[in-house]
Structures are given as structure tokens and as C-alpha cells.
Length: 147
Image 1 (cartoon, rainbow, N blue to C red):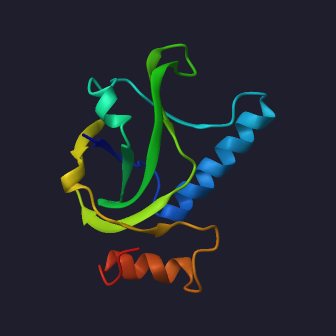
Image 2: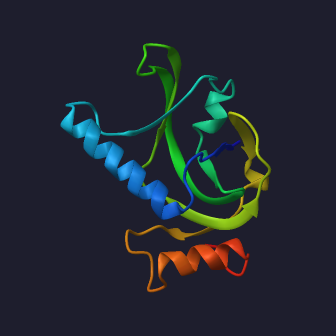
């Protein structure tokens, strides 16, 4: 049975900002001669690894609302920049917009059963529609649009 993870996207205000940050990180990894992949590092390793890797995604909470997800490709031991052991959650680079779902703040990550996961809306593109990003953010904050 598929199990997802949910995580706060700290320091990011919009989905486009997350996409831009991840794109820039891939460029830095390439320049450094490292494998260019989206790998989110966390201290705790999911014990239910098999269920998460059976089609699970990482759902990002941005400013108190789940707005986007990324499919989880792998969960493996990793090292932080300072050499500390951690867990690496390897993510598909494709960001998939989801129906907005409010979430309270929490630390670390949590399991998200498939039945509780918000439905997908669409794949996030670089130039996402004709509406200016600032207007989209304002309407989303007022809960007038989902994404």
C-alpha cells in the first residue's frame, strides 16, 4: 500500500520559488562535478521505506498549505555537508501541483496516508500561466484559487 511523506518547505513562499531553488541547486551540483539529483536530506529515516517507495511522494507544505508534490525515487543513507550521517530522500524533478490543503506547522516529516493526500491538479511549468505570480500568490493567500 502506498504511503506518502509530508514536509514543511521552510524559507519558500511559492511553488515557483521552490522550483527555481531546486533548478539552481542542480546547476551547482553539476558545476561541482556531483550527481545532479534532487536529494532532500533529513535526520530521521522512514521505517516504512517499502510503502513509501511503492509510488509514494513528498508533499510540500508551503506557508501552511500543501500545494505541490514530488514522487520519491529512493531513500538511502547520506551525509550532510558537515559529514553528519542522515537520510537522503531522492525526488523526481517534476513538481505536480495539488489541490490546496491547509496544514499546521510540525517538525521534520510525517507519514501521509494515500487516502488523506490531496488530489493532483497539474504539472508545474516554468512560466506557469498568464497570471502574474504576485497576483496568483495574493489570490491563493485569500483562498480564492488553489494554486
